[in-house]
Length: 332
Image (cartoon, rainbow, N blue to C red; front, side, top):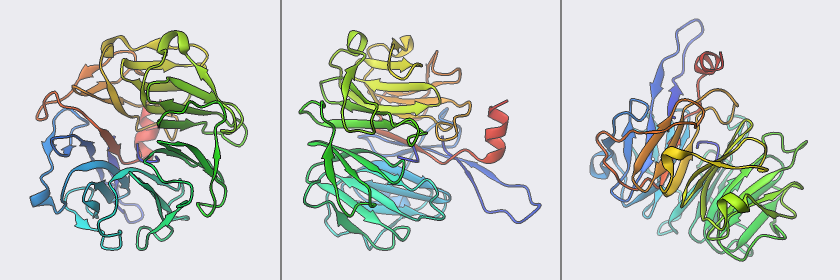
């Protein structure tokens, strides 16, 4: 998803300094948390005070907007994640929300896809109206999505699907993938020229396609084996893989893999790299079965950052895009 730490820009008039607001969100079984200090300290987001209900499983950040989804529907914050209201147009009593994806140029193409435990929903007007898409094909949980354009790839519990018309029609692809749930997906940033796709599975390891998702082969078998791969981020030339046995890295598009030693044995459930979309220097934030870990040296060494949270399971992480001045500073 194009969300997946939290820094945002408020609107600024010409020649005025832009205000930078830091936000990092984490969804856990004990409720959602927010960090204003790049993950160093966490505060609990309490639904009764903030305006949302039920368990929150995933966040999506779009400028000052923050979507929060879970068991009780879809909620929206218009103040950088501080206060929320129910999205009334979301189907009442709908399935649990599992994933988000937005258009890269959201201001020009305000399309949002929301994956759920029972299929896929789409809004083409910034979330004002919603419709279910792919009802004939997508009948199971949607775990991951990639939208290089015009193709949209959707990883589900029952296979990999592709649409070339923004969700009007879907076809099943992915010859060579195992008959197991597909939990994560990462695509090449330059998909039109280099149509590589990685898919993480439940209990069957990692698979790679070099033809846009038509055919796949297992990769990293000697290191990953048949690991459950729950999270994937492709950051520049580095593929970051979150698995039940730890965090794995590949800097050659999946030919060789190594394990991040500080996370050996940790079950990695989520990964956030705030510079991934722009391929700039960035911290790497990892959500595990025992809290949040952070690296500031390209995923070589990690340390635990959990003050105010404790050693709890981190189901997902979310962030705003890096602001321009921060990208410039980090890329020096």
